[in-house]
Image 1 (cartoon, rainbow, N blue to C red):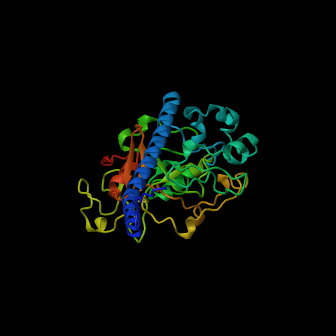
Image 2: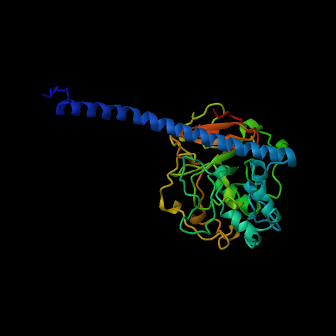
Length: 353
């Protein structure tokens, strides 16, 4: 005769209690896991910006000049091949560079006649993509001919007008009496020398990240530069500081950041936390050969660039000319950020933490 032994089992109440405990543990652990994941992606982004900056510095060691943002073959409209193409040999992509080296000195319209260059333009390179941003390899996944984009850009100027003047060769447009860009990187056949950066390489921005997918084609010079500063909401433009040869946010008092009410009460003034969900920032796409940089209409709302921007919580990754990388807080004092953009002019040279 078989003897049945009664085994203990969960009651319904006990099972519900266990499920509730597991749910609570998941609720407690999930934010920590997500934070760790975000931190890991930001660190990867830091490393990519670091590698691109080191590549640019290696380029400078070889050529004695920093890489230009975009070349200006045959004229003053800087619509040629980007500085990122020039950096390919320095980021272990020499084979890609060798395929298009004959196109480097051409205008974008001429370069686009090359099948090798168009193939390169469609190539999404991990070195130019931030892991914390959209994983789309191009601005139009539905087209095999869509140009690939970069989440990283060279810092060209503090203000939009200065960036626009630089694109046009410094002629006819600019801020005040200034008709050339005030950032370390420039649109030119040759970049600046380190000796020109009189504010100091550790105080001058070099490369930053950007969420832009509209006009962010990594092979196009005009798409590869960025301006950092933003005036909005009726806030005044930067002003020349007395006899000093530098511009600063209106109300700025040297060594007393935010001391003036007209300055302190109107923050933020940087692009770092700008609202890019507005309709004019929605990306559009056309083929690279049909939309070379030379065809972009400067001064229209359609070519308004994203500023430095990020999906990393509260910070945007930047590098400096000396190769250092910083996660800059989106609430940074705008004067500090403004002075970090400029490469000369005798500004206070304030440090970015």
